[in-house]
Image (tube, rainbow, N blue to C red; front, side):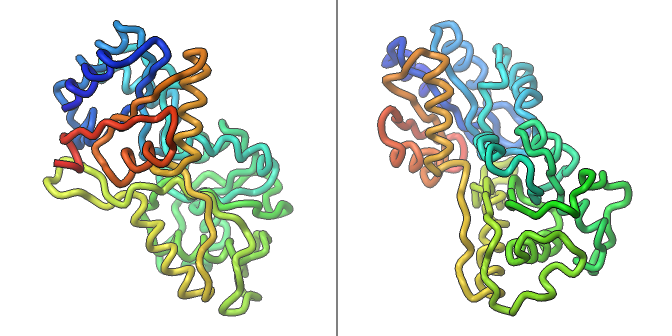
Length: 306
């Protein structure tokens, strides 16, 4: 259980150790707090052991997520203690900050605010793109009142696609993303019109759509954001005749584990060990094992694994 995992960490941890907790299925199941979670976190707080929340969820600004965790669990939580699947993407702004980046997900107003906070100064949502060019996806009307793209966006190329969370209108997002990936970066209403059926990808895709399944209140696991990425992989391959090239974020990918170890190490003044407490052997545990030193893993049975 979560409490036993925290107790084990407390007994084994030295001053140079820290803990990363998965959220869904470990500390929360559906909308309900796992009963042992607040006590486990308070025990680590009292012992002075640094911890953070490492989730494949997203779509909320890290500060707001930290405030929600603090209220739910009754412990102090700062924004640096939240690593969502897309949090390490902030480093991409160094190369793509002045280019158009296409944002994929849901709750697009929130997603654009997150991207801008990361340093992307021309973040264009699929929703806004569709509103500007309705014929890109004729099967649904554009969202009324969608915030417009940034000023001057039509004069800038698309430098990247950021798939940050799973969308609600999969058909629309699949169409627009495939168009942009093969567009040469040119934002126009006839996007993809000049592309041959097997035109290759020429815009990079960065994806933090990680979990294929996750534990919720329903007794069986539900599709996570990774299910959308699976659909995108298959659709692009059928369209272009070649595999989709992408850089993956979130668990179990090394970039997220490296980011968390660096954040915790900076706070602790160096680390000998980081414990990953998770419920999913294919993401939480596999990622920690692949990342190697200083990571160790603890599998709990409160969520995906029973």
